[in-house]
Image (tube, rainbow, N blue to C red; front, side):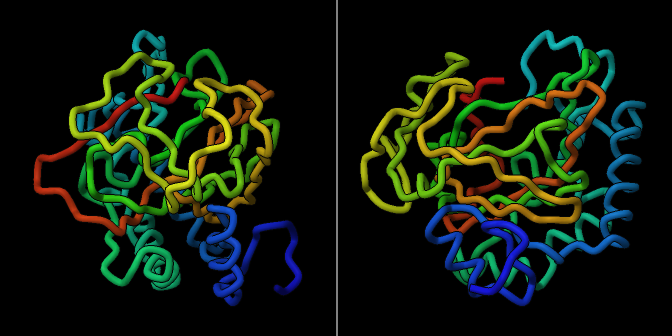
Length: 281
């Protein structure tokens, strides 16, 4: 591999190295896909969409609170804008970028598809630790556990970072290589939600049993690492990767990104959706 600023970070001319690292560890950072000009457009359009949700100009499709816990007392603050690629041309352009599509095809197959208009679509997320915010962190989970009876898997999530991440504003925590384990469906979970009938017992890139149980909340995990991103970076992570997000340590900071996913499995029929909200908040 060539020289990188940090472990797991690859430029757009280093895709072969990125794929190698991702296959081994379950995540990687793509740097250079979103330049300052494109990122400024994404930021401006997402802030506008966020305000339109707050004011009621955009309907419930774009501003639901499905990700939040009940009674969060958000005082009108908008942590999420769902289906944001439908209202932000800059986001729509970035999530369909030819380089990103090529990476996804290499990871998931040529017939992989972007979940842009199903479930939640592409989501703009504004995580803040202050009292006005309903979202600051999320506990350990894998993405596949949110849809354990669906056949959409495998998938790769992407996050386009509007803000760089740090301990001050929060960051991604991952267990490298955990995508290679067959993690059980969330029959036990922090929120006490029920797993639907037909759920697979476990899924992963292999059928290897995890060496220990996934914690239910925010505990330290053997082998975990912090993944930091700069503004404009795109973090890719596998649907089977154990991950969580740390809470910011500075109440004045914010952590904003655009998140979505490409899928290598079967696109579900219209109206067939599933979201098992198993991760602790």
